[in-house]
Length: 310
Image (tube, rainbow, N blue to C red; front, top):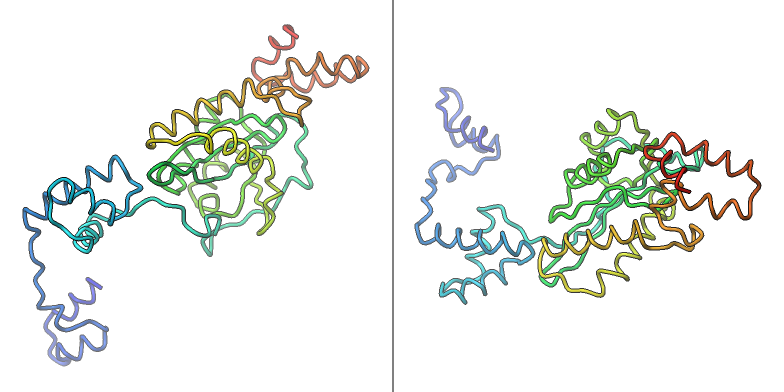
């Protein structure tokens, strides 16, 4: 629009300004409009709004308007909305179609049917869910090892974007492990160029579930149920920092101490590292089976020390 206005504003011998504006669908009166400078009163209000939003990014313009009136400012919600639009601030809340991909982005096939994960780090699943706070919502991204159920990386963010997913992936890589496959839905975060480039650079295969097939990524969906019923629904988080701290404590407990029925009542940490699982298997399985299982896990970091301890 700015370029079209400039073309209309330039002088032309053959075509009048009115004709040029009509051809380029530019409102002729907008060429003569001179924007007013923001008054100092509005600047002070914008600073107040910025301070409130920094602490409570979940408040919309109506609640921020109430806060400003409590601070002694005589403003209405329309003015606050106009100033927030100038500042490009918007309340954080769960949107519809969180897993909707952008048209034109790459979609990858589902690989786990042909390559089912048998050992730890054969496949990691990733997904995003929202966590309710006392003042709004935040988004939790997590990567789970499909075999051991160990949460490899996670991130809490006020934004639903690819950057949050990349931070969770970076945390997972800092553990010293790397998966053969990463399985996700077809959300725009996982079809973005940055996400695909990161996994391709690390030589990791990309797998995506089909539309309406949430059970193809059932392990991370099951984790969402666990963390919400055992942690989130039992507490009221005061803010983003409090939510991040308490969720981090729960994930640490989930990985190291929480026993899973599907794992024979072992913890994800033990199954991932292959320590106590050998003691249980040795009671019911022949020695050859246990030795074969041990040989598969010796390639993982710290596995040799854990095997000796077992």
